[in-house]
Image (tube, rainbow, N blue to C red):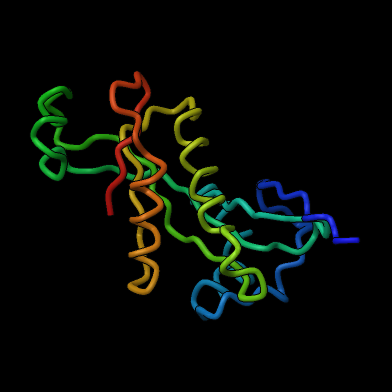
Amino acid sequence: MAAAAPALRIEPLSERHERESFASGVAPLDRYLRQQAAQDTRRRVATCFVLVGNDEHVPIGYYTFTVTGMALAELPKALAKRLPRFPMVPATLMGRLAVDARHQRHGHGEFMLLDAFGRALRNEIASYAVRRRCQRRQRGTVLSVLRLSISHRGHPKALHVYE
């Protein structure tokens, strides 16, 4: 009999999550989750969301959100002309995204990206775009997922994605 697939869910990072064993293979991302993420959340500098499975205390992956702005000049002219002529437009920054090495290549990063876009769309605070900072080795994967998942043309609450 095959083992059941874990039930996955994404929730805000809390003290009950066991972060010490997290190892994505990228030292700065691992260090951030272990040492800085809880502090940034308490200080309201960023929000960290963790992907957990059946063992709900051990993160499989995580991503962070914070608010930022984008210069109106950074947007394509077709989009910029529909916006007020302020120098900056509100955006959501996805600063970090990591999956534990033991769980990589199972689609968890894409699952977290889609969750992040859903949260940004449902956000009650105005955000016109999502920015994503990428490590060089992640860039191709992130962009291919964005092309597949973000096609809200004409949607009244469309998000525009930029790096």
